[in-house]
Amino acid sequence: MSSKSTSHGTPPHPSEADSVRDSAHQIWLAGLGAFTKAQQEGGKVFDALVQEGLTMQRKAQTTAEARLSEASQKMSSMAREIGSRATGQWDKLEGLFEERVARALERLGMPTAQQVQALQARVAALEAQLKARAAKPATAAKKATPARKTARKPAAKTTR
Image (cartoon, rainbow, N blue to C red):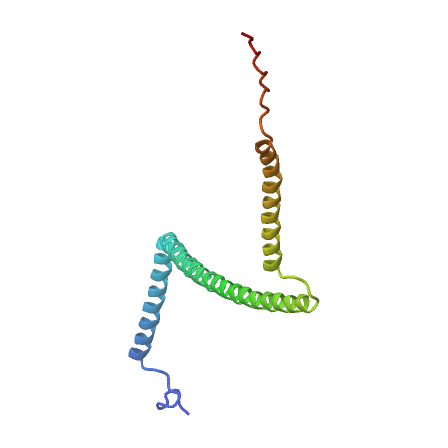
């Protein structure tokens, strides 16, 4: 085998080798240029990234606060609804309890609150009547006693 071979494993022609070397050199120079530019503008890029990070953090925080507020409002609404339902149930339970106690007291012959109030009113009216009657005889007795008339002395008879 000779030093020159065909396209299978043959060394490139000098023009191809120069072309590859030139491409590699250009890639190397582009890399150096990018590295230099990154060094020169690295502070600016870093500052820009920090600003973008702050912007993203603020957006995320605002979104999180909005969602938290929304969730809080939903929870408050649910709590109010549950509270009103519970109050309604307690009212029903209280009504049933009062009704059953009233029936039991009625079976035992106990007067209702309305009946007790009516009796209190009647007692108050009777007390007022008694006071009025007690005051009337004293004034009636004063009127019934006639005033004493002073007796007249008979006039002296004159003789003539």
